[in-house]
Length: 582
Image 1 (tube, rainbow, N blue to C red):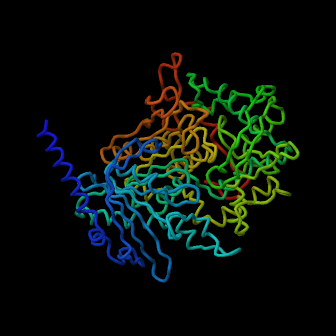
Image 2 (cartoon, rainbow, N blue to C red):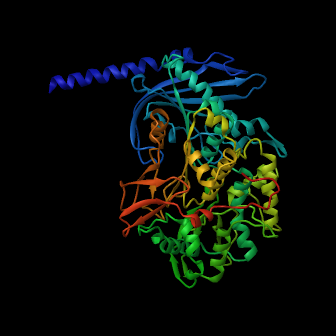
Image 3 (cartoon, rainbow, N blue to C red):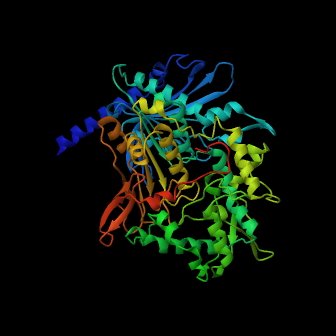
């Protein structure tokens, strides 16, 4: 036994020496691409930092399994000719003997362009160098909205394009060459390049597929915040419904409506487990008016609404709430679910699937009057105040005089202003396809921030654009050869859902993608794991759109079925616009 322990100690020492000897500022400096590798880019070699990290433990994440990793933590900066803007990039580089000829680009969330240690470990554990960038915003802790305006009325346009797509593209190009140099990979050997991100990170993934197609072999895209002009302003729709109908539901009433919807729609997929896997069947079969008169009660509490990731409401102290679900409350909930239409009844945008929480509709309590009132969603309020009206403000002070038509106008304004930077809806992915790229695209069925239908609509836009002469089924089959969309039963926005804890989540997407790209193993279904609740640890498979999940024999047997009526609930005609809305 002593001899075995001695050998193990020697092996550990050898590994540590291998990583420590490679992870030095001098070796990283020598591995940097040459100045001009990207036209106009100069590297600041004096900015290089490199430190070895051992036994870093990561657990409880949703986008990658629990893991303990060793890596070289590298950062450095570069500049563009004619600009004093310095861009900082970071790379987690696996130990040399753990490197698997892979590179992973990662993105951020909300107005952060990177998520660093929340995303990068998910590449290192699979032998990939993982990269991220500050976008040139001044630091890894500086968000895009902090530097978007130079002053009131003046847009910092270079930062818009860096946030839109350029910064991650540059980080990827630099990172791939750094990887080759650092690990001494010959030009004849393949370094597989991937991207992974969710929400804003998902939008950034599409920005790369649409504008840097040649750089990636695989994209893993979750709940993307594409269609920016509509998506951001849409956060105000729930507030406008409340204002227009002149009813501001107590949060507990909305919570009761959500819970009753979940209870009613849960068994529609053939299995009762507390998860709404078929929000389409819920829409077709459940009448929300059946909830009217149901009693609700919530104890007093203090809560903070995050404004769905993009804006933050202040902490609120809520009194105990006791009552019954009202006709007015159900009318508000149903109008929100129906989505935005203009005064002529034309559809401008979509809303969340039935069973999703009504976070945008959260109201505030006035302790003086004892009444609930409007609380403007920060995500939508900041978008209009800062990005459309160009004031350095975090929210709108009022919705006085704002109508559904006003909101549609804001959507058109945002789409037009940021069409070539943030809208991110180019449906022609020919270059990515011809380059042999693969896409795994997933979206939570009960996403309360970015409508699930947004991903379905873009998928259909790509299908229609890429295969215009084919039937629905044949074009879908052709698209699935390289692009697969999966809806995640019960999942919230890039996260688990406490309202539906038994829902699965696709935690091993990088592994699945690498098998598809590198070994041709097609993910006909997507691997997912239940990460909380009474079935924690159980494995499930997710159906590839347009197939939908269904259980037979009292929930014992799983199948992916084709249901035209269900598919049709995800088809939208955005006739409020003259231009196509992809």
